[in-house]
Image (tube, rainbow, N blue to C red):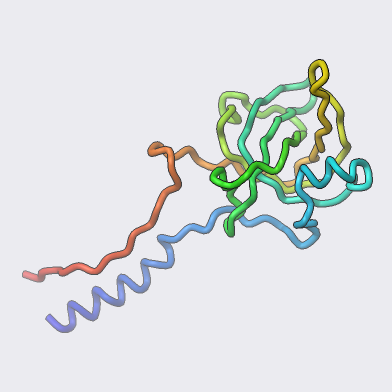
Length: 165
């Protein structure tokens, strides 16, 4: 029985690290972390060409002849670079990806993290509500999976008893 318990502990030790996922890995060596969409909007064109790692919730997806434009509402990123919707929004931005991204997959309400370069600052809006938005050229993109419970998945560890016959 003592040997079986030792084997169970060894198996548990070997299997536990494989059960943990940390999310995507972005190359953030050149990323200017203090820049947020709100900061870029304030400094305007001086931020063009800077590398950023931003995330947020998709507000809309538009396919153009050679690219896809996604409007985002930015949120701070957690340690896994996942947008934190329970924190204050950091402004809006657009990301521009060459080619076609399916609007049914990149749908409003989905969470997305992107690394890329600030291409340009665009001004737009309706009537008197004109806004300034940074546009990011995509280097890396991660669409976070939907969680059926409407909350972040959790991982639980426990200690139990096993029986050998």
